[in-house]
Image 1 (cartoon, rainbow, N blue to C red):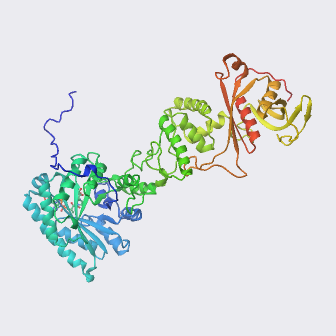
Image 2: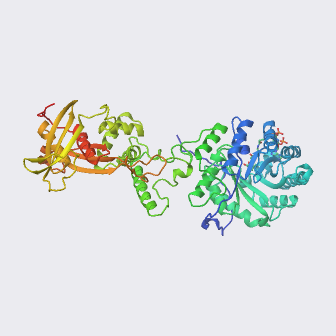
Length: 621
Ligand SMILES: CC(=O)SCCNC(=O)CCNC(=O)[C@H](O)C(C)(C)COP(=O)(O)OP(=O)(O)OC[C@H]1O[C@@H](n2cnc3c(N)ncnc32)[C@H](O)[C@@H]1OP(=O)(O)O
Ligand SMILES: CC(C)C(=O)C(=O)O
């Protein structure tokens, strides 16, 4: 196959001569005026345009999200569109501070029909368009530049007359703003676009600083890079007169996939207002996505004006339900996977980031700085549950994170490695994601944790009862049934463990002594079963119960019901003697109990259940 060669088929864009462009060094400091065109540009691009009911649901969501300018319809297009506008007006469904916007072509009968639709509304943006580029002038309208201006001017005057009429109290007393779009602006000669708008403004004759005319400059089809759009906007702003009487509105489409970038640069270049759709629905590749724009601002520390995206899922539900178009799982901010890391190094960094964040918050600094997460999912009403998900690409950090989230356990580092190998084996074998439930189940099975009361998930070894006494001198034993309480009067040399331990389903009475509780139990195990094990690592902590909605690591279990978790790593004494304790194979166990001593003993027996050594039984059942 020959390499793709466009030859002379496609024309490149014409750069704007703007040597002193200022937008590249500017920084966006405030929110633009937002206008939703979901119910018009979005709607006209759907396979099945929205029903009246769907439009209403969508409209209510737009109002709830905070839009103050909503293009509700192309009223002359259909009875549904016309009827929808009448419905929201007649049922007082337009808040006083919301401007409904209606679109009409520059055709008299359609303009008149549009005015009939808005009669009685409090605030209306009347939006008229006609295409201005050479392609449209030549192919669609068969118009010269002057004829294109004449068309716009003549119909603007019709709009003005009707505005005068419908502003009268007896005809509804509507407040009007006029919006004019030179459709295909980005493909129009720049000087002609400015001339056209100047003439439209003159024909309108009502623009003032207090009631600015809106010039909406659409990238009807995105045919150039974002910097080109920015240059066009800056050039327009520099060359149009009476700039203070104009709202420069941006209306980018996404054919090259750069609509968000083009809008952001267009705002730096002088744009005051943005028209777009929630989640980027719209003709072909869509209109610019206002969710992404608003949240891009938000996570630069700039409030996105009146828009509130703090319940992103409800936006996704309404938009995808009414448009009947799913939201891509990787859609910025809104997709199912956008807060999720599967890969090990990402998970490790996120886990460390959450720990550092908890520390920062404790020190009174709430700056959000978590690796790989540009925004706090909680700010969008999401939980942290999906942040780390495990599959065969994951590492110990991610697995440990999920164990911490679901069970409140902070696994010691080397235990993380050991348990990760167990999970990785299953993930590799099945080729599937390991859910939190899967990992919790594997953890409970591996360390024999769940349902110990019923004995259901017990390992080979389990604790039934125990007591400790202190051996003050060889042969002189004072029983202290108060489970390990220190004698207080004499310095003990040993602690003696006495208790009932289950091994392979049978209960044995065991006794042994050691420097501490764990070594006393191990001594008892050795004398009863011949298993020689030493503790290589022991850690314990109060159990954290974060809950899925609070940031990981932020709340710690407290109070009388707090439990202790103990983690024990045992090594085989004989192997240690041969290869050294450091190199010997480790066997991990976990114990959980309200009593710290009991949790340690349980952890030893949990580890012994995984222990790999020939054994014999000396004890009596
Ligand atoms: C870029 C945009 O998104 S613009 C918005 C586009 N949205 C829509 O078109 C959705 C709603 N549209 C409709 O329901 C219909 O197209 C209507 C009701 C507006 C018009 O329908 P029809 O009268 O059947 O005309 P139709 O759409 O086939 O043709 C367009 C005609 O309008 C002319 N026209 C197109 N745009 C405009 C305009 N902005 N101003 C004036 N005339 C226009 C065309 O040149 C063509 O004229 P011709 O018949 O003399 O060749
Ligand atoms: C009507 C205009 C603004 C339009 O939708 C476009 O050019 O994309």
